[in-house]
Amino acid sequence: MADSSPVRTTPGARGPELPAVLFTRRPPRPRVIVKADLLPAVSVLSLIGVVGIPLGWLWSRLAPAEHVRVFDAGQLIPLQLESWHRFDGLAVYALLGFAAGLVTGVGVWMLRERRGPVVLVAAVLGGLLAAWLGTQIGVAFANSHYAVTTTPAVGDVIARAPRIESMWVLVTQPLATALVYGLLAGWNGRDDLGRRLG
Image (cartoon, rainbow, N blue to C red; front, side, top):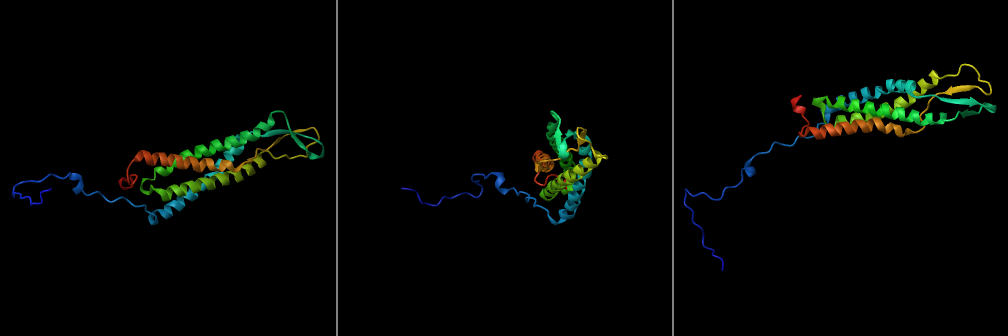
């Protein structure tokens, strides 16, 4: 049977010590700042979106043209192995977009006082806008660069401007931006991503 008698303690006696962790005050967790980051986020989105113009111009100069032979009724048949350049155009644009996304992710991370999800979303959307704008402007630049000035005769070989036949290349730049920004945020390890040190 358990003893229910009260336990007497002397005034100088100390009971079991509790760990100091129970009495330490933890600093409040930083919250996501939205209002202060909205205007810088719009600036980031528009600035990254404009990157699509030089990206498209660079692609129009680097992507190889496809050489085709003119047949009856204006039919254009690619020469042997020239049809591979259709993939080359996609690969060149994907690599340019990926490189632009890497640079964008690092550049946006350097905005220390604005680090956080709001600017990350703006950078990803800006990368998507830049990729779309680059495909539209790049094809236009390529068409003007490889424009046929005279009417070709049957049997002539002409250079057909490179084109982008798949819109999957639009994901490379925003994906690279999100990947780099996420890796840098994980490497940082601070609750506020170092914003207060800016």
